[in-house]
Image: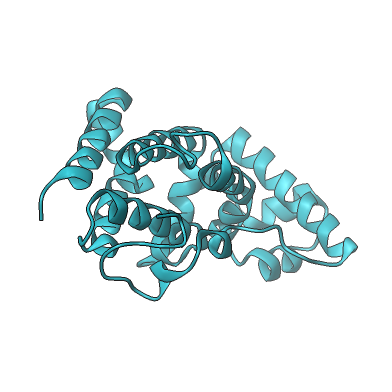
Length: 213
């Protein structure tokens, strides 16, 4: 079975191939692309220097040398900026999932790939936790509306379907991704530390990939 199939019940979102769900660079006019890069570079600089929570959209516009209306129309708010800044990092991880070496990429047992994904995603979170948290908490259910979440969910559902044929892969994929939410990781790591967070997530992966129905 490959990544175009999944065992168990499927929703419309989980039946889409991973390649379709992968983040792609936006297509835009050259001038719009230049403005976009200026704004993102300014936002990255200010977020790094001042912290995500302390930077206003007006400050980003001033740093980029563009009108604030341009920033608001293009990105909406700081969470929109966060999503755009994360886009390239997400594409890199998605490409490794689709065609990178095992166990993260194809060629390893499903349970090993699930564990490798959890480790890789935690590494990604460690480098961008504040941005991911902002993108996921912009409003009720914001995390589940982000395009990248659909990719992660589809990938995990496929692997769970391979590891446990006949399971409710869609529902279990949400359960596996729940402890990888940025808000959860932020709160729990402050209490137990990064190593225990990683060990706990691995335990969840093992339980969901191997427990009988």
